[in-house]
Length: 301
Image (cartoon, rainbow, N blue to C red; front, top):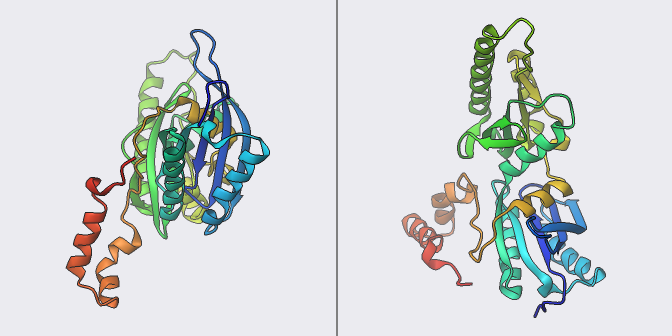
């Protein structure tokens, strides 16, 4: 049991894609009128697709032991809830739920596309210009991406709508339409600006594993669409500072974190065929799946 004299910690988990990450930060007592500050203690990440279950909990246990951080001192857990790998999302959310039940920690869900958009803007802000919009496109499966458009204003990103599972062509069309609209608005604005006025260049930045894994496709889109800029692969994943910032800004509560899958899993889409191969009634299998995934079947906290 955690005591009031011991420092409390925030844990951040991310397994939305092939990289497995966790960040442990100490919660510093806030000064009067200021928000609580987080001081990072440990950050680890592995490119270990398919090995997350073997790595995450043992590595976390080892890090806590080496830092002499009692498990009950972890009083907040922020977890990337998707979209991304079904296995990775379940691994992270299951680990978060188990720890919360053991320690009484509060939980916060982090949207992966929002995390990547905000991380990209912070890095791009170091340069002289920032994009007026962002398209986050992460890999969903072959020919399909999790796509979301963001408008940029100052140092903030605002989503233009929910995350969607789109074909590469549909995601590219969304980028082209948004870029054309922004370019038209710039032309109108420039026509009413004095000759000495200065208009910053309008451009859309595209980023994410859905770009990296379909590089030739997006290079053709970029070449044919003025105002579209492709960001390099190091924008594909959040870094320590990105997870720390997201955890500090998150809202925590007692409810389990809901996964954000966006699209049905391959097993769900092929459930009837799988059921037949196992000698099960396809209709009964579909009914059983719906029953198992309803709100009423959740394990109480």
